[in-house]
Image (cartoon, rainbow, N blue to C red; front, side):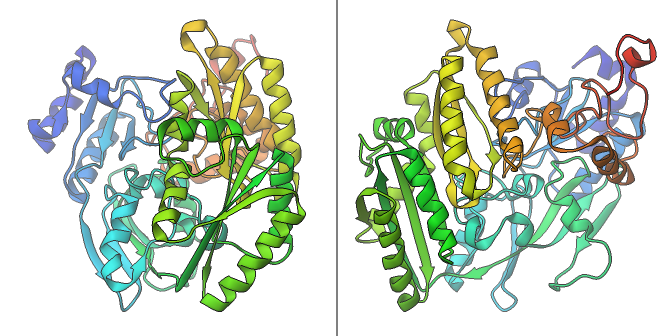
Length: 487
């Protein structure tokens, strides 16, 4: 227990509300929650609450509201932008015990689930009905649907099927004062302001989701998957542009450069060509005749763009091997580098070749290696900046990672495609948005959370200068003292 917690009494109230078995205060156990997948930032929270129901989540939030204690919701902790980074004098509200699949409704093509359910378990529950949940991040075996809602997660097949926001019908949420309300509804069209749309992707800054109704889709009748090798990264990028420009919308187009292929080869039974410069994984699904016609067209495009080899998955087992390598790529990079940053930016598809060339030049200048494995069809890059902490390369790698994200904005893209802004890129937000834009977003946030207790320090550049708290404008202490000036 922290002395601060005992002195203020809020922890005693939290323990009395949830029971001692549902609150972690042991310093060693708290370390489990000190970061998410972005391990470069670590903060040990004052306590962790482990509610088992919406009512208990609301009760924990009411304790925080009553004492002005900041709180951070957390699922599996697989986020890659520091979105679930704790606050030192606040609590983490873990949703890992809310993992019931409440209902699968094959008539209305939906499922009702709690936020701690993993993404893949929704599709497993829907499978007996010939249905599945479409957004599928590479971490789908472990990431939770609550985190997917917070980050508006995507995945390989979002090129054709869209992101989380396109597949959530309704959400029960706990607001910053402990109020429980429902956003959206079972019908596809809801009149009035789209508050559910605003909540999805808000990275936990508007409240905590405790129950979600997701859309389910019928499994495709037919699927074809191939890997096309290219002698240059630019050639692979141009092929992506040509495929989509031809009016074809594959279920997925993924790209791996040679460094990523080497990493995959070092850790799994790889089907990728070890010495190719880049590989595209292209998957089409739909009615068999349509898929067959478009699949032939895609192969012709790849050859026309300089593909040196095309391997078509002969059966579901070979298709699974292709995806196993792609989805394991982030973890596999650990085989070739002791440390790395995973970046997440977006560029217009037509500028893929240009951005990859510039990333290569920036890496050379920084004296670091960058592996690229990403959702090429969406223009959603995932450059992995490799470095060695023991050799003092951390700051150089972090700077390069930020410069790559800001390069995406320079080329007409976005700071994030699916990992969120979190702590990692909050200070880059002014590169993409003007002060009026950010002020408008903060007013929306303040409407949900006027005291700034929900996941503070994330998304916004606090808000105009790092170090300020979100909410209505307040002069920064250094600004008021005349030490710095607002730009």
